[in-house]
Image (cartoon, rainbow, N blue to C red; front, side):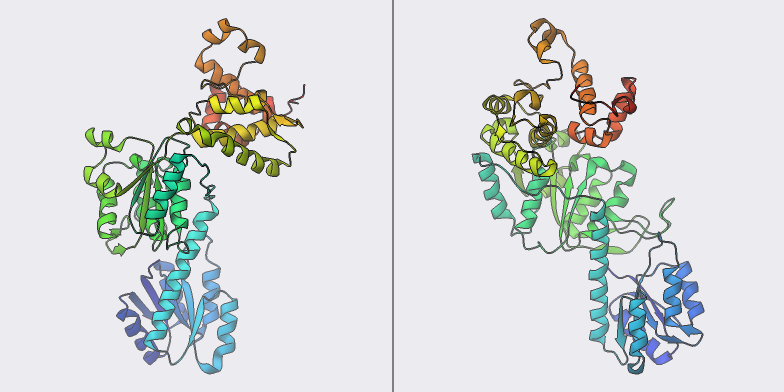
Length: 467
């Protein structure tokens, strides 16, 4: 994270001038003030990344300025503070560190010391921003499961491309594990100690996508109350994974192409060029070549992304992976729910193998988890717990109904979907978050469907599944 704006607060002209020259040599913007009052005024009007603050000022103490910063609203972007202290005032500098200062330096200081402080501050800011990002973006399971020939070939491709800086394009249907492959590339790369950020392009509103990718300056648009770094800036030095990259609007594609070619961009509302060194991994479940022909995806961007393609076949094309993966998911779910099961029955294994898995690995994982919840102390997972059919659809009717061909052949897909959703809500006793996860849909979609069914979550809260 680049340190752009630096504030120097010092009432000694010589120290102030020396600091100004050293910071400007590193091409940072600098503002210098002499007093506590002037510092607080500057901090209230502008955004600074770093403050060199004297421990003693003519109208107060450095800790007074620190208190002013600490008392600012939590949403305010606050600068890192470096205390500038004399040898005799080291105790006060240590006290300032306890009060929230980032670091301190002793007079006289050298150009190399200032350079070290700037680099240390940039590293700290990046780690802090990335950690905040991960606090609301839970990591996906990073283990690439399966022993089929297709998965073995993918593992070999990962081994070849991971140590390089090549851009990778991962293709495959929804639920095949594209992010898992991306994280495995990262894990085997030389960037393992650097940031890895995953972004689902389909989950970002089109009018916010540019800001999410490239950040924005204070005042760039309504509610832009402070400068905010984008995902490319947060991932600087590491890897950025853009899932569902086909969803990027055409007007934003040239800016993405520029980042890939020149490794630079401007924030929304800004004029300064930000340079980054990011390795990009992209993924899509759509046919980018077809989108190019339709004018919805730039040809030059496609070829820039498709340097090293990796395709993940759907689960139905690698049936030998199904049972080993199901058993792995079962073991995890038994630990999660403290369930005691011996495994899958033979007919359950046959059903798992024959099902077409339109939702791929994600559907398999959810199916196993749902089966564990339904097992209710059984010794084995049997077909009735799996709640799937061998062909492709979801078994949401009663077993007796499934024995009647006239019912199965006439029932509508909407009816099957409705019955399945209501059944899952019964299992979770109206827990919409849990139900949505098992159904592999968003909670908003679930609420919309319940509204269409004229149903309320309250209807499922106290259902006893043993009745």
